Length: 354
Image (cartoon, rainbow, N blue to C red; front, side, top):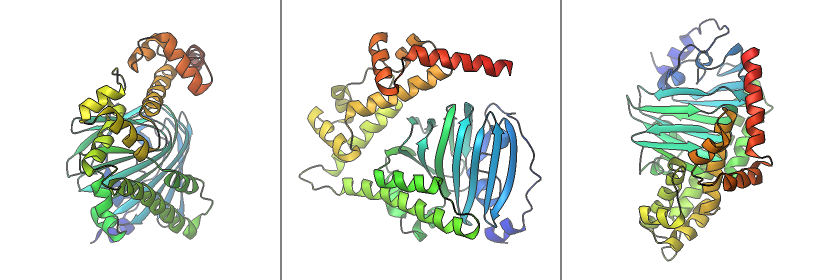
Protein backbone atom coordinates (compact mmCIF):
# COMPACT_ATOMS: atom_id res chain seq x y z
CA UNK A 1 0.00 0.00 0.00
CA UNK A 2 1.50 3.35 -1.00
CA UNK A 3 1.67 6.38 1.31
CA UNK A 4 -1.40 8.07 -0.23
CA UNK A 5 -3.54 4.94 0.14
CA UNK A 6 -2.24 4.50 3.66
CA UNK A 7 -3.29 8.01 4.62
CA UNK A 8 -6.73 7.60 3.07
CA UNK A 9 -7.25 4.33 4.91
CA UNK A 10 -6.15 5.76 8.24
CA UNK A 11 -8.96 6.70 10.60
CA UNK A 12 -7.82 9.55 12.88
CA UNK A 13 -8.18 8.95 16.61
CA UNK A 14 -10.94 10.81 18.44
CA UNK A 15 -9.79 14.30 19.31
CA UNK A 16 -10.10 15.71 22.79
CA UNK A 17 -8.71 18.51 24.96
CA UNK A 18 -5.06 17.99 25.83
CA UNK A 19 -2.64 19.36 28.39
CA UNK A 20 1.12 19.74 28.41
CA UNK A 21 2.38 16.41 29.70
CA UNK A 22 5.97 16.19 28.46
CA UNK A 23 8.74 18.64 29.25
CA UNK A 24 10.66 17.73 26.08
CA UNK A 25 8.34 16.00 23.58
CA UNK A 26 9.75 14.50 20.39
CA UNK A 27 7.92 15.10 17.10
CA UNK A 28 8.57 12.88 14.07
CA UNK A 29 8.32 14.98 10.90
CA UNK A 30 7.85 11.90 8.74
CA UNK A 31 4.80 10.91 10.79
CA UNK A 32 3.33 14.38 10.32
CA UNK A 33 3.44 13.90 6.55
CA UNK A 34 1.92 10.42 6.51
CA UNK A 35 -0.90 11.03 8.99
CA UNK A 36 -3.64 13.52 9.67
CA UNK A 37 -2.18 14.58 13.02
CA UNK A 38 -1.24 18.25 13.44
CA UNK A 39 2.43 19.09 12.98
CA UNK A 40 3.14 20.15 16.55
CA UNK A 41 0.57 17.81 18.08
CA UNK A 42 -1.31 20.10 20.45
CA UNK A 43 -1.09 17.41 23.12
CA UNK A 44 2.50 18.60 23.57
CA UNK A 45 1.86 22.29 24.13
CA UNK A 46 -1.71 23.51 23.73
CA UNK A 47 -2.74 23.88 27.40
CA UNK A 48 -6.33 24.42 26.38
CA UNK A 49 -9.41 22.97 24.71
CA UNK A 50 -8.80 21.90 21.11
CA UNK A 51 -11.40 21.31 18.41
CA UNK A 52 -10.80 19.94 14.93
CA UNK A 53 -12.78 20.20 11.74
CA UNK A 54 -12.13 19.23 8.13
CA UNK A 55 -11.98 22.04 5.58
CA UNK A 56 -11.59 19.42 2.83
CA UNK A 57 -10.34 15.87 2.44
CA UNK A 58 -6.73 17.07 2.78
CA UNK A 59 -7.05 20.03 5.17
CA UNK A 60 -7.58 19.82 8.91
CA UNK A 61 -8.07 22.88 11.11
CA UNK A 62 -7.27 22.88 14.83
CA UNK A 63 -8.85 25.64 16.89
CA UNK A 64 -7.48 26.03 20.41
CA UNK A 65 -8.49 28.17 23.38
CA UNK A 66 -6.62 28.41 26.68
CA UNK A 67 -3.01 29.36 27.29
CA UNK A 68 -2.59 28.73 23.57
CA UNK A 69 -5.06 30.72 21.47
CA UNK A 70 -5.67 30.66 17.74
CA UNK A 71 -5.71 28.13 14.93
CA UNK A 72 -3.41 25.83 13.01
CA UNK A 73 -4.15 24.32 9.60
CA UNK A 74 -2.51 21.11 8.41
CA UNK A 75 -2.56 21.04 4.60
CA UNK A 76 -1.49 17.87 2.78
CA UNK A 77 -0.07 19.03 -0.55
CA UNK A 78 1.10 15.56 -1.65
CA UNK A 79 1.92 12.19 -0.04
CA UNK A 80 5.43 13.52 0.66
CA UNK A 81 4.68 17.19 1.36
CA UNK A 82 2.70 18.89 4.12
CA UNK A 83 2.22 22.50 5.06
CA UNK A 84 1.48 23.75 8.57
CA UNK A 85 -0.13 27.19 8.78
CA UNK A 86 -0.04 28.59 12.32
CA UNK A 87 -1.94 31.75 13.28
CA UNK A 88 -1.73 31.76 17.08
CA UNK A 89 -2.24 34.83 19.25
CA UNK A 90 -0.36 33.22 22.13
CA UNK A 91 1.68 30.08 22.76
CA UNK A 92 3.39 29.07 26.01
CA UNK A 93 7.15 28.69 26.25
CA UNK A 94 7.71 25.29 24.61
CA UNK A 95 10.86 23.16 24.11
CA UNK A 96 10.66 20.09 21.92
CA UNK A 97 12.74 17.86 19.64
CA UNK A 98 12.25 17.41 15.90
CA UNK A 99 13.34 14.17 14.30
CA UNK A 100 12.56 12.15 11.19
CA UNK A 101 12.67 8.53 10.12
CA UNK A 102 12.93 9.69 6.48
CA UNK A 103 15.23 12.13 4.64
CA UNK A 104 13.29 15.42 4.62
CA UNK A 105 13.57 19.13 3.92
CA UNK A 106 12.12 21.59 6.45
CA UNK A 107 11.45 25.28 5.82
CA UNK A 108 9.69 27.72 8.12
CA UNK A 109 8.63 31.26 7.21
CA UNK A 110 7.98 33.38 10.27
CA UNK A 111 5.84 36.53 10.47
CA UNK A 112 5.68 36.67 14.30
CA UNK A 113 7.31 34.65 17.06
CA UNK A 114 10.81 33.69 18.12
CA UNK A 115 12.33 30.21 17.93
CA UNK A 116 15.73 28.67 18.55
CA UNK A 117 16.82 25.59 16.58
CA UNK A 118 19.98 23.64 17.39
CA UNK A 119 21.65 20.85 15.46
CA UNK A 120 25.09 19.59 14.47
CA UNK A 121 26.79 21.96 16.87
CA UNK A 122 24.99 25.04 15.53
CA UNK A 123 22.29 27.03 17.33
CA UNK A 124 20.23 29.73 15.61
CA UNK A 125 17.68 32.07 17.19
CA UNK A 126 15.36 33.54 14.58
CA UNK A 127 12.42 35.92 14.64
CA UNK A 128 9.95 37.58 12.30
CA UNK A 129 10.77 37.93 8.60
CA UNK A 130 13.33 35.15 8.75
CA UNK A 131 13.22 31.81 6.93
CA UNK A 132 14.61 28.84 8.83
CA UNK A 133 15.83 25.92 6.73
CA UNK A 134 16.98 22.46 7.80
CA UNK A 135 17.67 19.14 6.12
CA UNK A 136 17.03 15.89 8.00
CA UNK A 137 18.72 12.57 7.36
CA UNK A 138 17.01 9.54 8.95
CA UNK A 139 17.55 9.69 12.71
CA UNK A 140 18.71 13.33 12.79
CA UNK A 141 17.46 15.46 15.68
CA UNK A 142 17.03 19.22 16.11
CA UNK A 143 16.37 20.80 19.47
CA UNK A 144 13.71 23.53 19.16
CA UNK A 145 12.59 26.13 21.68
CA UNK A 146 9.54 28.26 20.88
CA UNK A 147 9.42 31.44 22.96
CA UNK A 148 6.19 32.48 24.65
CA UNK A 149 4.17 34.98 22.66
CA UNK A 150 2.42 35.31 19.32
CA UNK A 151 3.19 32.67 16.68
CA UNK A 152 2.40 33.31 13.03
CA UNK A 153 4.35 31.07 10.70
CA UNK A 154 4.14 28.72 7.76
CA UNK A 155 6.20 25.52 7.84
CA UNK A 156 6.88 23.18 4.94
CA UNK A 157 7.90 19.54 5.50
CA UNK A 158 8.67 17.66 2.29
CA UNK A 159 10.92 15.17 0.55
CA UNK A 160 13.64 16.07 -1.91
CA UNK A 161 11.44 14.47 -4.58
CA UNK A 162 8.74 17.07 -3.85
CA UNK A 163 11.28 19.85 -4.30
CA UNK A 164 12.29 18.32 -7.61
CA UNK A 165 8.67 18.22 -8.78
CA UNK A 166 8.47 21.94 -8.09
CA UNK A 167 11.82 22.49 -9.83
CA UNK A 168 13.36 23.91 -6.64
CA UNK A 169 15.60 21.11 -5.33
CA UNK A 170 18.92 22.48 -6.52
CA UNK A 171 18.27 26.00 -5.21
CA UNK A 172 16.77 24.83 -1.91
CA UNK A 173 19.52 22.36 -1.05
CA UNK A 174 22.21 24.89 -2.02
CA UNK A 175 21.11 26.98 0.98
CA UNK A 176 22.20 24.14 3.27
CA UNK A 177 25.58 23.48 1.70
CA UNK A 178 27.30 24.95 4.76
CA UNK A 179 25.42 23.00 7.44
CA UNK A 180 22.25 21.24 8.55
CA UNK A 181 20.52 24.41 9.80
CA UNK A 182 20.55 27.88 8.30
CA UNK A 183 18.51 31.09 8.49
CA UNK A 184 17.88 33.58 5.69
CA UNK A 185 16.21 37.00 6.07
CA UNK A 186 12.89 36.96 4.23
CA UNK A 187 12.73 39.34 1.24
CA UNK A 188 9.71 41.59 0.87
CA UNK A 189 8.08 39.50 -1.88
CA UNK A 190 8.26 36.33 0.22
CA UNK A 191 6.96 38.14 3.30
CA UNK A 192 3.94 39.43 1.39
CA UNK A 193 3.19 35.96 0.00
CA UNK A 194 3.26 34.45 3.51
CA UNK A 195 0.94 37.15 4.82
CA UNK A 196 -1.47 36.44 1.97
CA UNK A 197 -1.33 32.75 2.83
CA UNK A 198 -2.01 33.37 6.52
CA UNK A 199 -4.94 35.63 5.66
CA UNK A 200 -6.44 33.23 3.10
CA UNK A 201 -10.25 33.46 3.15
CA UNK A 202 -10.86 30.43 0.96
CA UNK A 203 -12.17 27.19 2.45
CA UNK A 204 -12.93 23.81 0.95
CA UNK A 205 -11.38 22.85 -2.36
CA UNK A 206 -10.20 26.39 -3.12
CA UNK A 207 -7.97 26.66 -0.07
CA UNK A 208 -5.35 24.06 -0.98
CA UNK A 209 -4.37 25.42 -4.45
CA UNK A 210 -4.26 28.98 -3.07
CA UNK A 211 -2.06 27.89 -0.15
CA UNK A 212 0.28 25.92 -2.41
CA UNK A 213 0.59 28.80 -4.87
CA UNK A 214 1.50 31.26 -2.11
CA UNK A 215 3.96 28.79 -0.60
CA UNK A 216 5.75 28.42 -3.93
CA UNK A 217 5.73 32.19 -4.39
CA UNK A 218 7.41 32.60 -0.99
CA UNK A 219 9.93 29.84 -1.68
CA UNK A 220 10.78 31.37 -5.05
CA UNK A 221 11.19 34.77 -3.41
CA UNK A 222 13.70 33.46 -0.87
CA UNK A 223 15.55 31.16 -3.25
CA UNK A 224 15.58 33.79 -5.99
CA UNK A 225 17.08 36.40 -3.68
CA UNK A 226 19.71 33.90 -2.52
CA UNK A 227 20.52 32.89 -6.10
CA UNK A 228 20.73 36.52 -7.16
CA UNK A 229 23.23 37.26 -4.41
CA UNK A 230 25.30 34.21 -5.40
CA UNK A 231 25.16 35.27 -9.05
CA UNK A 232 26.32 38.83 -8.34
CA UNK A 233 29.05 39.99 -10.73
CA UNK A 234 32.43 38.66 -9.71
CA UNK A 235 33.76 42.23 -9.68
CA UNK A 236 31.36 42.87 -6.77
CA UNK A 237 31.32 39.70 -4.64
CA UNK A 238 32.87 36.31 -5.24
CA UNK A 239 31.01 33.13 -4.24
CA UNK A 240 33.50 32.72 -1.39
CA UNK A 241 32.77 36.23 -0.12
CA UNK A 242 29.02 35.67 -0.28
CA UNK A 243 29.37 32.49 1.77
CA UNK A 244 31.32 34.43 4.39
CA UNK A 245 28.65 37.15 4.51
CA UNK A 246 26.03 34.47 5.18
CA UNK A 247 28.27 32.99 7.89
CA UNK A 248 28.44 36.43 9.51
CA UNK A 249 24.62 36.64 9.60
CA UNK A 250 24.44 33.18 11.19
CA UNK A 251 27.06 34.22 13.73
CA UNK A 252 24.84 37.11 14.80
CA UNK A 253 21.93 34.71 15.31
CA UNK A 254 23.95 32.24 17.38
CA UNK A 255 26.36 34.54 19.29
CA UNK A 256 24.43 37.76 19.92
CA UNK A 257 25.40 37.60 23.61
CA UNK A 258 29.07 38.08 22.74
CA UNK A 259 30.65 41.55 22.35
CA UNK A 260 30.36 41.42 18.56
CA UNK A 261 31.71 44.19 16.39
CA UNK A 262 31.94 44.42 12.62
CA UNK A 263 35.73 44.11 12.85
CA UNK A 264 35.64 41.02 15.08
CA UNK A 265 33.05 39.22 12.98
CA UNK A 266 34.89 40.13 9.77
CA UNK A 267 38.04 38.59 11.22
CA UNK A 268 36.19 35.43 12.28
CA UNK A 269 34.66 34.84 8.85
CA UNK A 270 37.78 35.86 6.92
CA UNK A 271 36.70 39.14 5.30
CA UNK A 272 37.92 42.67 5.75
CA UNK A 273 35.64 45.10 7.55
CA UNK A 274 34.49 47.19 4.59
CA UNK A 275 33.88 44.12 2.44
CA UNK A 276 31.67 42.53 5.08
CA UNK A 277 29.70 45.76 5.60
CA UNK A 278 29.04 46.14 1.87
CA UNK A 279 28.20 42.47 1.43
CA UNK A 280 25.82 42.48 4.39
CA UNK A 281 23.89 45.43 2.98
CA UNK A 282 23.75 43.92 -0.52
CA UNK A 283 22.64 40.44 0.54
CA UNK A 284 20.35 41.16 3.50
CA UNK A 285 19.18 44.73 2.78
CA UNK A 286 20.15 45.90 6.27
CA UNK A 287 23.35 46.82 8.04
CA UNK A 288 25.40 44.59 10.28
CA UNK A 289 24.63 46.64 13.38
CA UNK A 290 20.92 46.99 12.63
CA UNK A 291 20.58 43.22 12.41
CA UNK A 292 22.65 42.65 15.56
CA UNK A 293 20.54 45.15 17.50
CA UNK A 294 17.27 43.61 16.30
CA UNK A 295 18.30 40.07 17.29
CA UNK A 296 19.41 41.29 20.72
CA UNK A 297 16.20 43.22 21.33
CA UNK A 298 14.04 40.22 20.45
CA UNK A 299 15.91 38.00 22.90
CA UNK A 300 15.82 40.70 25.59
CA UNK A 301 12.06 41.06 25.19
CA UNK A 302 11.67 37.29 25.56
CA UNK A 303 13.72 37.31 28.79
CA UNK A 304 11.77 40.23 30.25
CA UNK A 305 8.46 38.60 29.36
CA UNK A 306 9.57 35.58 31.38
CA UNK A 307 10.21 37.78 34.42
CA UNK A 308 13.97 38.24 34.16
CA UNK A 309 15.57 41.33 35.69
CA UNK A 310 16.52 44.22 33.41
CA UNK A 311 20.21 43.93 34.33
CA UNK A 312 20.15 40.20 33.62
CA UNK A 313 18.48 40.73 30.22
CA UNK A 314 21.00 43.43 29.31
CA UNK A 315 23.96 41.20 30.15
CA UNK A 316 22.42 38.17 28.43
CA UNK A 317 22.23 39.98 25.08
CA UNK A 318 25.70 41.49 25.21
CA UNK A 319 25.18 44.95 26.71
CA UNK A 320 27.76 46.01 29.28
CA UNK A 321 25.78 49.14 30.17
CA UNK A 322 22.21 48.86 31.46
CA UNK A 323 21.62 52.48 30.44
CA UNK A 324 22.64 51.79 26.84
CA UNK A 325 20.41 48.73 26.84
CA UNK A 326 17.44 50.69 28.20
CA UNK A 327 17.83 53.37 25.52
CA UNK A 328 18.04 50.79 22.75
CA UNK A 329 15.05 48.83 24.08
CA UNK A 330 12.85 51.93 24.38
CA UNK A 331 13.84 53.08 20.90
CA UNK A 332 12.81 49.68 19.52
CA UNK A 333 9.59 49.00 21.46
CA UNK A 334 8.46 52.41 22.71
CA UNK A 335 8.54 51.43 26.40
CA UNK A 336 11.35 51.15 28.92
CA UNK A 337 12.47 47.61 29.76
CA UNK A 338 11.46 48.19 33.39
CA UNK A 339 7.88 48.90 32.23
CA UNK A 340 7.85 45.77 30.08
CA UNK A 341 9.13 43.72 33.01
CA UNK A 342 6.51 45.14 35.41
CA UNK A 343 3.72 44.25 32.96
CA UNK A 344 5.15 40.76 32.45
CA UNK A 345 5.39 40.05 36.17
CA UNK A 346 1.84 41.27 36.71
CA UNK A 347 0.65 38.95 33.94
CA UNK A 348 2.56 36.03 35.46
CA UNK A 349 0.95 36.63 38.87
CA UNK A 350 -2.51 36.69 37.28
CA UNK A 351 -1.83 33.37 35.56
CA UNK A 352 -0.64 31.78 38.78
CA UNK A 353 -3.85 32.80 40.57
CA UNK A 354 -6.15 32.03 37.62
